[in-house]
Length: 229
Image 1: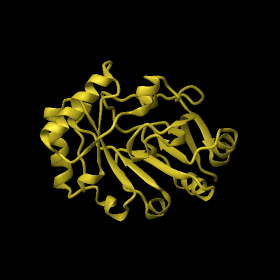
Image 2: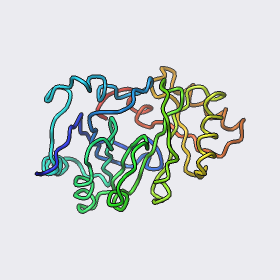
Image 3: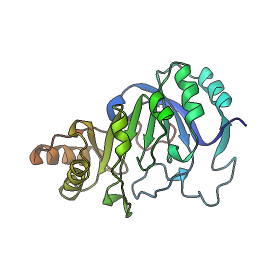
Image 4: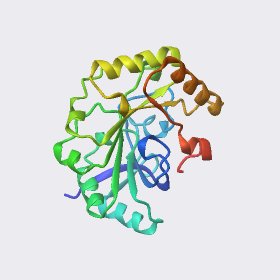
């Protein structure tokens, strides 16, 4: 039986985050998430997950349907699988098909699920976003050993209160032996004064002397909190 996926939305835009920031990308946003982050900008992918209605909360699409959608879109080198949490669905057939078409695939994940080796072999960029306490949950994080099987990843942390959050980032990274060169920090995208919180984060990183990159959400700066762009 051909794999199908619960899809929240599809659209083409510019990648707004991480090491691939600024590159045109197709986005496939998968429905469902296992976390409920207080600052999440896509709560529509999980707020109704226990009573989701097909055709309202999500659309079921297969690989061929997604390929047909891509064929009608302006060309872009990346396809980003985001969510929600993409690793909750059996995405390997989709990723393999996209890779065979020449796309570079980005998977945005919280990192709690260990990918199978076949998936590690074909994904070009793992955007791994562990959640700090500022997400409003008590989450147990493992050692993330699977990151040792690939170099194609970067870590994204949302920082809301730099004096509290930056030490937590350091402890998380250093206790797992993760390289600081892989760490990217970004402010809360829901903050109404986005430019101010971005500047506050940059000043805090500069003052603390930590070797992490500070990057904005480019899409947040360009289009605000619009959905599907």
